[in-house]
Image (cartoon, rainbow, N blue to C red; front, top):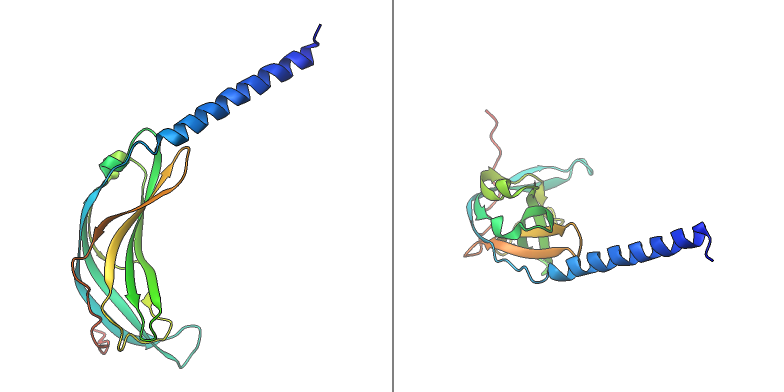
Length: 179
């Protein structure tokens, strides 16, 4: 006969095999649920201002402020395996030396389906500056609304919900006027 420890070991091995098989089936089934969320992204204005670098005193740096309007319906992305969405606005541009840059300038975490209809009029949440310290002779930038779907079980899914129709140019730096 088997001892009680052998029976507990057999039962727990069978139970863990069943749970792992179920989790694998859930992860594979999430590939069947594909959604194409639609959003509208428009850049209202882009302003470039000179400033001082905090890390290197005496060095001038140009900072860009982007005012944008986002309206998107992301409810098709929510299903039984969606834990949350990480939503972010990304600026894509090539600097004066020809290096391609992708900069996140705004983000939001959406945890429930009720919060998945996004209507935001705002400006960049994070500092937008170029490593060359200037946006002079930089070609226009494209802006896109990206998302990262985080499931309860399975792989992370990345996608795009909206994009500007035309590239938005960087204006020349303005003098900052304080009031």
